Length: 335
Image (cartoon, rainbow, N blue to C red):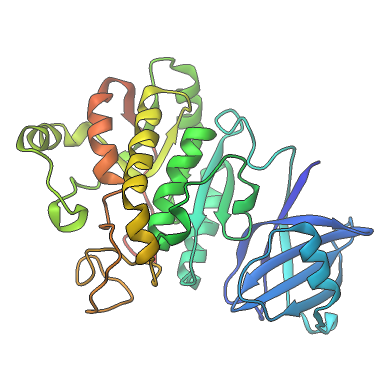
């Protein structure tokens, strides 16, 4: 069965929600979005005209089709003439996500949490327009459509660490592109084509963001490795913008080490799950997070399950990576 997704926005929604999947309901399509402690239901016909709007005060997203139908039938009506919602950017997929993301030039973005600002939405719209590729946003409304098992530690992670995990998950299982929600200066099409043509190339990326320190990763690299990383920093890729082939030793090693680290933290994460979107063991002031100067028992440092893993693996496979992703165009103003 095909999957149809859409962007949902409007005056009764905190921020636009992207790549929201529909279920078939009677003679139409039913979209459900969780926003501001409410489930919002939008029923459309097959010409994508809104037929009915409802809402239900529920505490979390619902992914089960039969339960969605039940909640919709028992939800409260919204006046359809008040312009509460706009539903647009419909996409149709044979499978979601597509199985051939590299060939289809798919760039994944990821968003979990509640701090999606108007400026962040501007950055995403700019990325979608400029990259000239197929952008799919993975979020709490569609994560259930991912076909492969997700690590048992995932539900306890902060939103920022959920993004760290899911970007590796996507590159390992699907390949294709990943971008932070920040605007880009040019099309990514040439980068996808270059990666497909070159059998020796495993990944194309952007500048390295800097070698993680004990302050933001919880531990230092040994001195020999650290010196090698510093020596090769101009040839390493960053962790926020890239395209990967799946089934390479590079992505396989990244995936294995990430899962090993989440296995290690599982028991502690169960006892001390994240309470804030940007929570990390670093706390404040570096990097800034919603807890201010509060202490946290959350066990994972900011960079420990992304850059701290990936930079040494880039170094090991330095002959199989290259730069090429267009420069960011947000000028540091993206939040």
